[in-house]
Image 1: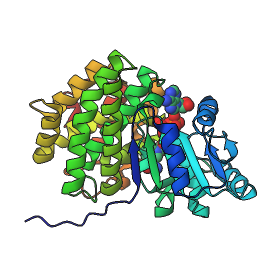
Image 2 (image 1 turned 180 degrees about the horizontal axis):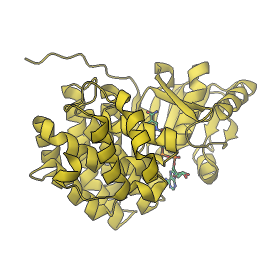
Image 3 (image 1 turned 30 degrees about the vertical axis):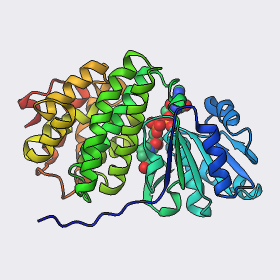
Length: 357
Ligand code: NAD
């Protein structure tokens, strides 16, 4: 019997190589914008200004830092009010989108997001703000961008290691969507197509960062992954990464890239239907080896110790993560399981049965 409730979030998606400037203009017109706040980090500032040259830009705001500190959010909100801003345009990765969302959360000013990584924040109604080193997240439709403009030409500049880590972050959205708390058949269908697109696109991107087809498949896959994730919610993988990122200040995309194979190896035997779909999307006979083959091809990040996580923190991290593991997880998880998984991920250990069971 097929019984589910699925909520589709309403936003326009405009996808086209080299079309960001014209699509921005048409969306700003559609939203009758008179005073635009352009949000981009300092390296992207000039490019953002060029793209938005024909818009009624009131201010360019480039104080963009990871994880949206509350002080940054408050300053950006005051600036938006001072300039009577009626449209927020974010151009950049998840950090730029995140700051626009923080402003929208208290002002309800619409956002047009122009993503330049594969983080996927543009397709979710999830916001995150950090106060006193603690990141709080929540869901609110005011932060869902009214429109998303995808232009692969803006992704050519992403260095290969960042493309790989960010692309694997998107792949993690897909894989975790298979067993996240609110998952449904629509999320799983989107996630399956996302895995296919990402695993087709990423090898082409690493071979040639300006490969348009590879970039398009990867960006398309990243969007699908975010839509699936937004509906399905955070599964075991995201809960682990959220705690690691918040408590140990680990880099977002790289942490996802390292943790994913361990979570998949841990859960796949307990979720054979999902694992078969993941394998099918990779075009391999099983999910774990499909992911391993892709990661080898991409020279993916392998060990948390390379990103500042210490062996001494393993037990504490396992303790912090356990209460966050969702009931929907297909296998019972103990603190010992988590410590073992984290130890393997810390060292970049091979995915042996011994390490994972
Ligand atoms: P980011 O936005 O901090 O970007 C990472 C780095 O890449 C930055 O130095 C940036 O300048 C650079 N960069 C971005 N685009 C580039 C390009 N095209 N070429 C060259 N350099 C480029 O990081 P991110 O991984 O995109 O996003 C991570 C953040 O997004 C985290 O804070 C995470 O929590 C958040 N996030 C939120 C959601 C959500 O639904 N709310 C979903 C996913 C991620």
